[in-house]
Image 1 (tube, rainbow, N blue to C red):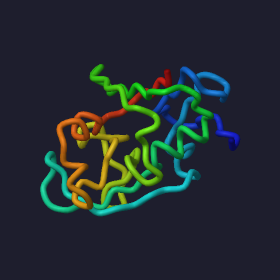
Image 2: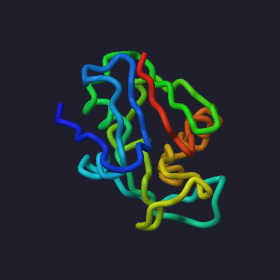
Image 3: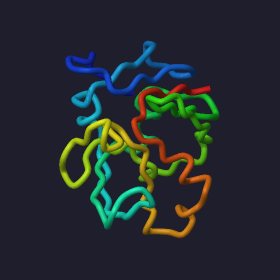
Length: 144
């Protein structure tokens, strides 16, 4: 587990719960960017056309914070939350996208973090369950 730097700008994500890192882990955009990023192009049911999303795979972030639980509870700014099984996370999907077409995006545009899957790459990513996991305006992750 790498040392996660203390945020110097606005905290955009808090991670707590069953993790081995000092709690809570608060991240600004600069705290996420050093982690390995995974870019991919995909269309979504919420946007027009194909876009390039770049972000940290959720599995990578969970490894960085030493997640030891069985589920990840992802919560949006508006309070919407879903439980994602930790053992269902893949190496490259989903990502916590912080760039769309190379640019950061605002709350108005579903940012600053959006849980995104490569929907066009496999039909298994085109299900109601996966769409429900695709939280935009992500603000908090609790590992249980």
